[in-house]
Image 1 (spheres, chains in turn brown, green):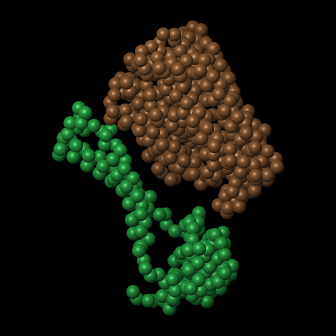
Image 2 (cartoon, rainbow over the protein chains, first blue to last red; image 1 turned 120 degrees about the vertical axis):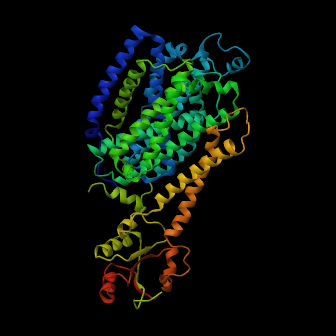
Length: 399
Length: 179
């Protein structure tokens, strides 16, 4: 059992400064882009960047609940980070309000009067219309926020009281909570990403985008853990075995992402029906095709081969580089899923697509470190309490 | 087999995982090399404590997987494109996306075979007889017995001192193991 409190400040101060600069410069340049360049492009860049960083928070919530359900040593050092990351969700939700008020027409074709015509689209209008879409968005964020709030509140109370029944309660909420999460994530990713091309449909979509968020969140958490180990409070706690476990999980999530991506592709490719295949025709031709190839190589082949190596996973300095590549490639993945729907005739990247994720990344990291501050960075009580294998990890503390 | 030692070795039973780990480390530090541990469940860190060489199973699995993947791709390429080209939906006969699922399955299959049969071979299994079976209490190894054996063929093995050394490590009992 841990009796020493570790706090995050000392390890994350540099990150906080960099995040502040990134947030200010990124968002300032992005706003400048809206004023002097192209407002439509501004909303699109804003939206993708917002989605990626909100996705990190959502992925963290998913991993947190998986961890509560499954237990396991790997979660002990990760739990506070996941909670803090998930706590950014309501704040990230606020950044959607400008989009809802002013940006919808630049982003969603279906929001235009007179677009949803024809046999198929006119029927989809029952679901894809602005009032219902906004109502759903509110519902998603309320549900997600409620899950995060309950989990973090009980976790905080557990720190204070040591009442292990709270651990059982968190597990009890996480099991049905994950079902709710899966359903809301399926609907939300369809609304937020799939509906950019209102004619396309895919039943694996929710799983595909959710695993992308989870993978990106997991990689980012590895980076944060590594920072906190190198120059911070987790140095006495983290051993190479922890990073080995995390590396294995990152490998598994990478494989799942590839599996889902390929599943969608192979089914549409073999059926070769025009209404679905055109989605891939756009994405496999010209510049978009090169981006797809880059995804295949750097989001799957290279991380997969590297993560097979045990020494690499045990060394967090090497692992953190792979995690950085994976997290970045998942941004590219989101870009590749979304942006071709706006630019079907070929690759299109604006300078605002570079500054927006930096700006939102800065904002997100500021929120994240604010949530992390003031709480012990390790949960004081972890289930199961007694098993020697878990105790071994915890006995490192305080040495 | 020529029997060069009067007994196979000494077998010590320990009350738990932790005690076994500590004892293994002590025995290894005392210079014994022909040692082995027997436990009802896998014990994290036991191989390191015993100083066993790194397992070669991962390498076998990697080779198995690569051979399986290559077999899957080549088999389909040969049968679909060279030996018996068949027009399916007007696609080229060497359409690689269609080859991936079966190649993936063969990768898994061969890797799994390599893992199972590789560890059987490296462990010299099946092995219907082993001297430690002669110790009555060894039956507990499949329920709650934690055992550590020092073989008599170890150069540092010397019956009296080795037995006393094992007894000093806090075992439940130390038994002689007949061949």
